[in-house]
Image (cartoon, rainbow over all chains, first blue to last red; front, side, top):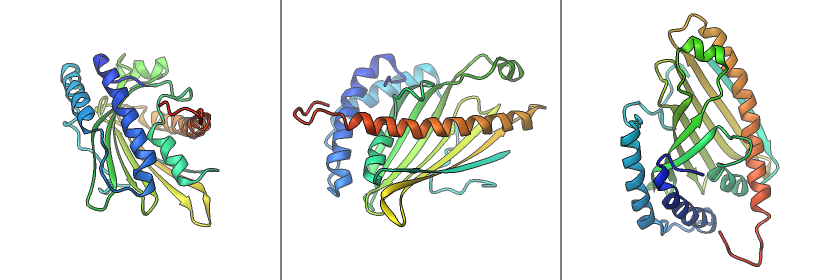
Length: 74
Length: 177
């Protein structure tokens, strides 16, 4: 799967592999320790944030209906 | 405004379905999702995993709708927040589009839970609110989008099954991810 930033895809894949392994082998099995992918995530994050700014994607400008919020009229 | 909902049962235990749901993209059933990024992720005090993701999607809207909406921009971004609770065995996922919001909003909510009577199967409940704004044909368009939701829901279920079947084909002798 690609990243929104063309240059971030390799960083994303590296992070995804790390995360998916932790998610399946630790998290779902009840291991409460955090994922070991923090450093990879920071690098990937840095790249994505830059791409989001460049492409002007309004990730903060929209009120996001999180799972804990009631939806109006819902 | 149109409210749409459905339910689907997967013949797999919750863990298997959740693993597939977390890495659902790419899959052959949803070629319209062209990019997925994690914006933020972390555990809360209850040990639940929160993920905020940005999905880049390419909408195959019919030409007439594009003409009515006056846009040729079919690249749409969707923000998604999911919470996985490994103890309660629930995964809740909410998504909403963050572009084209002046024309349409699609708010979707999915919950994956083990079947109350059978832990070997998983129930997905899914609902969406579709609102087309400022267009005289809005109720027609909302109806059309609700039909599209149904078609897409089926693709989503097929995608999860596809991921499960393909991930189970991993070579057990090698630990290559």
